[in-house]
Image 1 (cartoon, protein in one colour):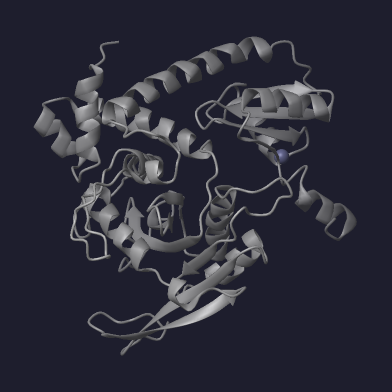
Image 2 (cartoon, protein in one colour; image 1 turned 90 degrees about the vertical axis):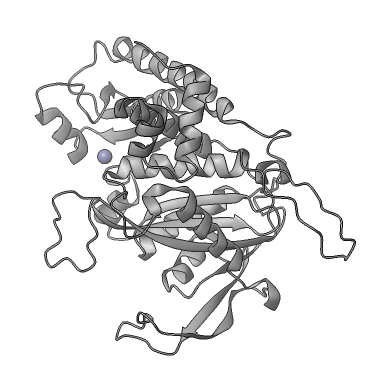
Length: 396
Ligand SMILES: [Zn+2]
């Protein structure tokens, strides 16, 4: 396969992170659309994996918010939304930012309901450094906006281990759902504590709202009133992941004058350097080289697989489903509907990944852990809490 050099691809990548669409890159760099798409694909998959494996950091003040966009079609104002594609429609991108270093700690794409807000808060919890007894090294203060889903989400992800507060803006005219109508005026904000005892001045969302603005300016997919929106969810995810990596590791903010009145300009570094994740400014070339390395590793994993899954008894009680594409391994029982569905098709290795049978549950877990050290789990339907619930009528 003919491949562009690292520098050429790095230029396209940077253009994509500075507000250009795929088609714009095609025209500017005079490369086929497929080449540009493949860069998003490869670097995007690397970036998704990269965020999963980032080491945790300490954070004192965190601001979280969500940002509106849509994939495939905008179902606002559409009489009959087409539900044939599961992910199509309005998508919210959650962001959590550290107020002191401006590092984006966690992000999540999903709905504005509690289930996605909780997933997001759990991701955030996983990004914060804990001491050996399981408590956070620094007890953070999390501020969110007035979205109700955050209350349950914070309760489920953090319980009483954080301070949290909400910054609720009020407008002069609201519709029947309590949302401000177009053209209504901002009249003030109320700061409410949710958990613990957050400092009044720390309950604020201005920094994360500025970050939402950066995201809209730097990603063509997020530009309102254009048809540059994402057409498929996986590419939406990829572009967001690439942007987060670029934003945290490559983007150097402009110099600023400190507020002490000295009048001197101070040079700044990337958020990742401020947070101590790296000691240098990354370039776009670094990202391309990382994605090339990621690709080599992934191919070697998927090539190994067939020999491991050879000679498997059809009636094995435990099964591991491995998807190299999503870098995920899941353990199921033979009775699980997921496994029965996969075996209903003619081929063992289909889009849903490869299946390997085991006589023993622990053996299956060890195998899954070897395939995907950071992303393996037991199926919640056949082996998890739902199973317990149905068998015993109560949660264990
Ligand atoms: Zn299952």
